[in-house]
Length: 92
Image (cartoon, rainbow, N blue to C red; front, side, top):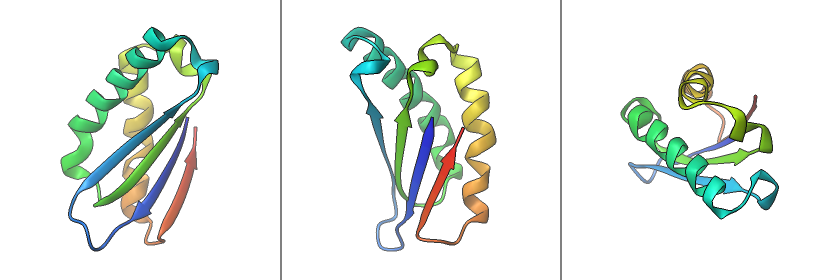
């Protein structure tokens, strides 16, 4: 997974987009991954800096459980609070 973050000082909201290509799987699989990630981001959004987030998903994500995805994002997201740049790219 790759997380791209853009700081937005004008909009007081957390906007999240997911890029899940066809290599991840068929539509049912991609939607399942999207639902899981959306649920995780909903849980963490009150603690995130305002801005736009793009999560690029790789095929290996399909094999991970919900808890594995959650713990992986739980490690990545706190790093965003330390970054003051307008663009941040985190890979896992």
